[in-house]
Image (cartoon, rainbow, N blue to C red; front, side):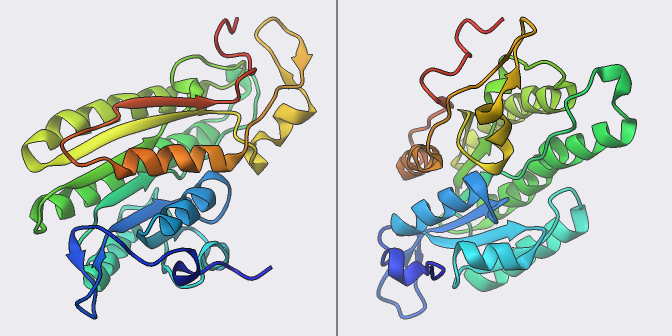
Length: 266
């Protein structure tokens, strides 16, 4: 199966900056963690909706498999210098950024907290929280300075931003913190026409959720198979959030497999 290209998915339409040929306006979106799973599905859905894509991830090859002709930015979101260099390349190429989907994230082994190493804790915090901050920081600076001013930041939260699973202290802590970051960005962005919102996802069918389909520990001690939903359903939700004018905002959206044990969990 060939890798999709921007042209094969859609011609750009609508937006804030002018294409190089002077004919079609462009909307520029950056997706982090775009080499697989939710990031890959969202990048392809945004391209199909007419956005021009930049893709960030640690490995170049999977990013190129996501979209062959997107701007590929090989960078680890946990490293300030790499993030700053990636945003410098994006600015040099496009001159602006209209949407950041802060998606990159990892989890730690599901073990009791007294068996978790500080290194495992820091790895999750560095990627999920510090990485979201570094990318939002760089996007905020660009969106404030560009003309027309403004843009949108969508952070990938989680059901765990509300309710934890057993043995998930690092992941749950970072996702609660991302909610605080989202609210702070939303407040501080008002003066600069920057909208910030969060999508909290439950059991999208990705490699990260394979264990849901095989059986996962529940709050009552049982191990149970959990339903999942198509990752494309998440992508459509993000595209909707991104499609709104900057005068409107989805502050928080929850998208989940209907029958997963979240409402009433525990």
